[in-house]
Structures are given as C-alpha cells and as structure tokens.
Amino acid sequence: MFVDEVVIKTRAGDGGNGCASFRREKFIPFGGPSGGDGGLGGDVVLLGSHDVNNLIDYKFKPHWNAGRGENGRSKDQNGAGGRPAVLKVPLGTVVTNEETGESLGEVTEEGQRLVLCKGGTGGWGNIHFKTSTNRAPRRANPGLPGEHGVFRLVLKSIADVGLVGYPNAGKSSLTNHITNAHPKMAPYPFTTLQPQVGVIDFPDRYERLTLADVPGLIEGAHENRGLGHRFLRHIERCSLLLLIIDMAGVDGRDPREDYAHLLKELKLYDAALVKKPRLVAANKMDLPEAAANLRAFRRRHKVDVMEISCATEAGLTDLKLELLDRVRNGGKVARPARKRPATAKKTKAPRKAKA
Image (cartoon, rainbow, N blue to C red):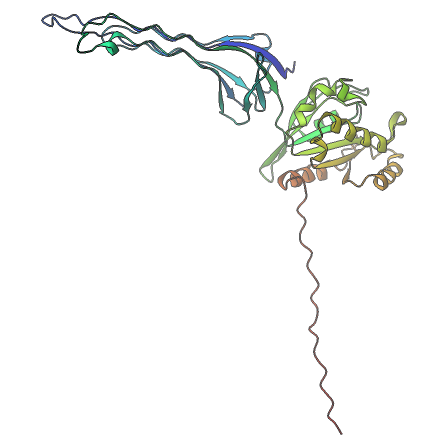
C-alpha cells in the first residue's frame, strides 16, 4: 500500500516539576535549599530519511506522544529530559497545521529535522529562590505543558524525471525496463494504481537518476476524474517531464491529440508544469502504423522525440543516456559549439608597374 497523505495528532512532553528540598547533613545545621530543576519535555520531530518511501506508518498509528521530563530531586539534581518522538518521513514531505491551515515547512534533505511540537520547560527548584532575606525558600515551580496539534503530512516525491502518459501507453513497461522498480504490467489500462519511484543506474558513469511513474491520466483529470489527479503532485518537483505516447494509435487513438490533451491537463492542474523541460518518448515504434503517425506528430508538435519500443527494447539505452544528459544540463542537452571552418587569408594582388 502506498500512502502519500495522512493526518496525525501529536503531543510534546510536559516539563518536570521543580523540587523543594534542603540539605540535611550531620554537623551542617544550615545546609540551605538543594532542590533541582525539572527536566525538559520531549519534542515531536520529523526526520527526513531515505529509508522510507511513503507515509504508511502514520496511517494506522496517527497518535504520537513524546516523553515527559523528570521531576527535580534533592541534592541539586535536575530531572532528565523527556524522550523525543522522532517520526521518520520520506524526502518531499510537506507539513501543514490542520487547524489553522498554516504551512510549517517541508522536509527535503536526508537528516533534516522539523520540530512539530516543542516540549514544555521544566520548573525551577527552590535553589533559584534563595535570597539574602529568604534563606530557606519552600517554593518550586511546576513544569510547563508541552505543545500539541493536528498536522497534515503530504508527500511530494522528489525525483529527477516524471513519467506521464495515458493509460496503456507503456509507462509500467518502460519503468520496468530502465529502472530497478517492477510495477505490474498487463494488456489493459490502469494497471498502475499507485505511484512508482524507480532508480536508473549508470554503472559506467557512477551516476543514477530517479524516475516517478504516476497512474495514467485521462481527459478531465484536473476535475478529479480517473486515478492520476491525486498523484500529479509527485511530478511537481521533477526537473524533467517524460511524456510517453502510444505512437501506433492502438484503439483508434490519435497520438497528436493525446499529446495535446496531456499538456492541457498538466496546465489546468498547475501552469508551472508545462513550463518544465520535457521530452517525448514515442512508444510502440515496432508496429507498422507508428512510422506514419510519427511523421504527422512531428509536423504538428515541435518537440524533441525519442523513438522506443518497450516490446523489443529498441531505443531504451539511448533514452536513458538522453535523460541523464538533460537532467544534468537543466533539461537541455549541452551541444558542442560549432566551429567555423578555417579560411585562407586574402592577400592583395601586387600592383602592376606603370609603363
């Protein structure tokens, strides 16, 4: 099960109470106050981690409480701090306060910590209230309560490449061939029900890319139709969009219209998505109808197209290298500068001597 949105209720630990005690030892009749302070309450903290990839741990356990600080003790002993509640979340988790709607931040880096609720401060012991006129204070402060709240966690996957396409266009097959993910593949639409994030390895270059595959979009996805509308947020952070098109036009589809409708749905969901660098993967080029459709597609849409076939695995290696080059160069391929051909210098003809 893939869970990308949950609501949790958290409570930080209360601070420990201060202690009111006095030093009592033989031959020391006026030992004075010796009560220690209470310990700090534990915080509720979000911790960014690569070890988790979704929020399923918090769907079935939405309540999280930190430990309470210990009370102060005699002999100037302060209480121990409460145990913090550390919640590991995947990178790309956005946090908002469910009650006020305020955005609290986003976890984007490994090891990043975001405090949701601050623990209460421990109370002072009576050693803090000793004065020249009050040498035996019997006063000690109680600990303060910790913060609590209701928060919504929304996961927006941080991937290099976002894979978008219509149902049954070959997204799962492509993900299965070029990444280490193994989504379900079947000859019917909507085989992908949850987003899949896979890693594309380049062992010879010691590099890797992450690819996010969202469920297939249909016309009207921005109006909550189909499955893909819930998961479009997973491609908001991608640096490159890969639009896979069924170029053979199976089931009477027109590849030119499919591409136009995909761009329309992305724009209606978030206008910033259509401004991202994008590349088209023309799939099913092994079928006889694909060549003519590709020529018509290129006449209508001026976009870079990579010809592939997930059935025969043709063009997949070139596609992987193209994705790596574009991601590393901000979405555009760095092409070598054209050198001008060397030309011979013109020399002036010698003047003819006058007769």
